[in-house]
Every structure is written in structure tokens, then in C-alpha cells.
Length: 249
Image 1: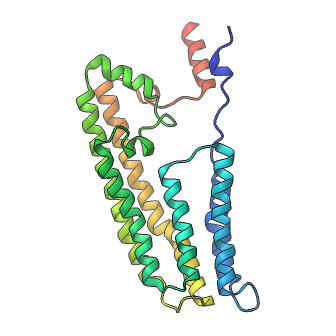
Image 2 (image 1 turned 90 degrees about the horizontal axis):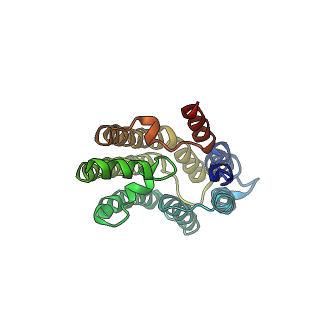
Image 3 (image 1 turned 60 degrees about the vertical axis):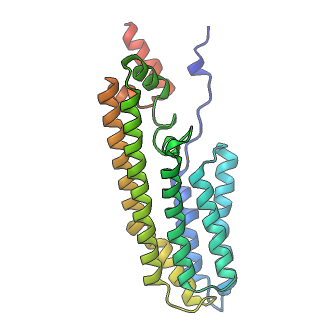
């Protein structure tokens, strides 16, 4: 009989380089150098710049057939930014929007803790990262469901804190950078600078805190299940086959 692990097609991973080019590189370049009166102008510079993250989101979903809560929020953020730009709202409203989105995600994580599928499952405890079946079997064997729930609650609180910190940083960065009148070349350049600076100032610290939450979760799972880290983490099919062959030798 054919081993099913050899016939199930692997899900295509996200192209990180293409993600950065479409969501950061091209929009930043267009808003910085393509929004002048001799090029696209402020209005069309903003519209063209926003088309790239929108097109990338549609392409990535069509290719990987994977849609999640965070990607929906990010897609909505791009559309709202475009709408604010076309309505010529000043920088204060961009700051409010950039703060409101991570704050809402953090509150949603907190509110979902009692739901059947908490958002922490989508963000950290998901089958793309963790071997859910193996971990659940070990939890049931040891009767450690209570310990597991406490681990998930701690992870949810850490995620909520990371998003609330992101909200404060987003608002502060937007208020610091967006000074020019809307619908001008200088405003688009400031928007591009904010978009670029958000990576070292906001995204990287938020990712570091999410990685800390994942590290705490994985350490707790090792403690309450007795499994090793390799056993907890989802292994690619080829590694599973190699491990099984080694075990049988």
C-alpha cells in the first residue's frame, strides 16, 4: 500500500521575498519617487502604490488557498488607507486607523478565549506549526487538559499585550511622521517613510513578542505532555518517513 504521507501534496509556503517587495518595497518606492507632479502625482501615486499589496494578497490567496483573520485585517487596512488618502484626510486619522487595527486584533484575541476556536489557535497553536494530534493524545493520556488551558490563556494574554503595544507604537509613529497636508507629494513621501519605518519600529518588536509567546507555549507543552520539541513541532512528510525508517532499522 502506498504511504499516504508520500502522496499528499504539500502546501506551498509563502514567498517572503515577494511579500516584502509587494507590501513594502514597491509601495515605498512609488510613494517616495513616483508621486511628484512630473510623474504620477499625489493621488495616482497613492492609488498605484496600494495596488501592489492588494494584488499580492489576491495572488497569495489564489495560490495557497489559505485565508486567515490576520490577512483579512491587513487587507482591510490597505483599503482603508486608500480611502483615507482619496478623501484627503489628515495624518491624525491615519494614526487612529493604524492604532485601531492592532488594538482590535488584541481585543479579539482576548474576547475569543472562551470561544470554541480561540484566535490563539490560529496564530500559535495551529497544525502548520504543531502536531496537534500527537499533542492532544499526550494531553489526554496524562489528563493535563487543565494545564493546557492555562498555557493557552497565558499565550492569549501575551498576544493581546503584543498587539496593544503595536497599537501605541503605530499611533506614535504616524503622529511623528505625518505632518504635511493630505493629497500632496510630501504627504505621500511621509506615508512611505512611515510604511518603511514600521518594520524596524513596530513589526520586528511585535514579531519578537509573538515568538516569545510561542517559545513559552512550546516549553509549557514539553512540560505537561512529556514530548520533546521535535515531537511537538509539525514535521515535513519526508522527515517522518526518514524517522520511521531509522526506527525500523
